[in-house]
Length: 153
Image 1 (cartoon, rainbow, N blue to C red):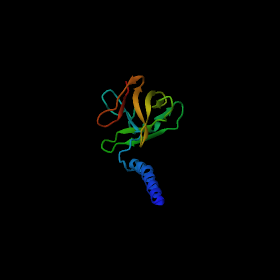
Image 2: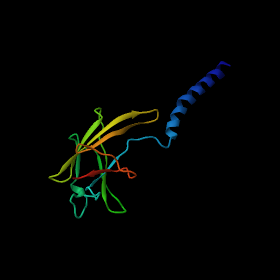
Image 3: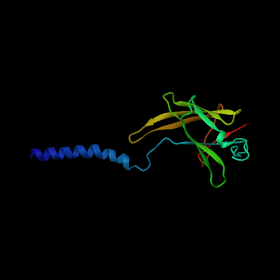
Image 4: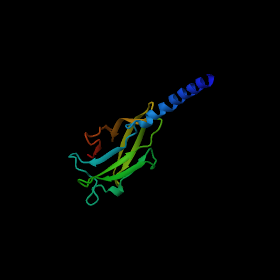
């Protein structure tokens, strides 16, 4: 009888421990830190990054974060209109802000200050963006495309 009781107790403990972990693995919509997608546009919304006519050429655009060039920064060419945008993931730190320096060409640069907070939940941990500032001005993602439009003035 004692052996049956011990087997049942061990089974209950295993189901509790391993069963709670599997719930997280089975969740299809686990939250992750999202990439930022940016386009550099003029005040009319026209993309200023163009391979043929500029004024900014995609290969000349570089990004540094807090003086460090090691970050995820990828060029994306939209199929429907050949516009170029960039996808980036800033390095995160305990200060909860990252300053990006955008070098558009050899004489033009801008800043993008990204504030974020670290979120820890039962099944996931991620960073959530709390404020975005382009050259000192607050900006928001465009709806529904979820793209940051950096408006050159």
